[in-house]
Image (cartoon, rainbow, N blue to C red; front, side, top):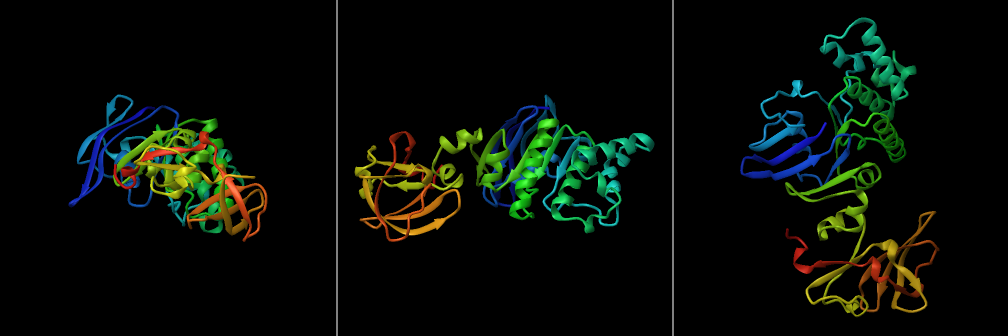
Length: 331
């Protein structure tokens, strides 16, 4: 199912939360809304689900205008941050709930629930109560409950934010697997860059109610549209036009150069610096380099380099990004 949003506006009092949003999600995409807290991404998700009405604009599922259609008739399913499972019902009954609302009964209901639980690897927990399960297991049940109703659109509202780092990694792989097996059109809200980069087919980066850029994870990371996108997606070093480092990074007068820490290359010559901070991270070493003029540069290199080491570094031209200086905090 194709999702199309046209000129969506939402105001809460005098505050504009969504400012003329245009967006298309293609059929079968795992599409991410990524941005800082308060940027409007969850409000947009709730408008698509039918829980909120836009003040302006249109929502289309395929070519059907959905604005007047109530939430329970949109055939969407929502996976919540806090799981939203019924604590007094078994795992089986939690998953079956949506089917019972749709008047499904008997062997057909039994088969659909068992199939959904098998898909998320929770068959063995069918008779357990949610409170006896780990966070990761509860989120699997929430996924099964969403998938069992065969929605046209699957909505995720920061579903992994309550899990620890290891469980988040496991659940990312699980969501990727499930989407690969059954590519339902999906819209996923998160503020976690790593989550978006590792899972998304495409990403819309949002700020203050507007979409700053839409693209694949690689496009967003390697070709950011502006300074905000560049700084929000991963770490980056900015070199202003009046910096002493500009002798090493040629550019026009009112232009900021930028480069990722992983593109810093330790070399026999180049820019002199001293290692002020060094953190061994196993597969890489994270450095904070101080230049002769006191500028700080983040770097990630493969070898361990102790603090206090004097060295030289370079950044190859192909890895330099350039932005007009006035776009720092403007649109």
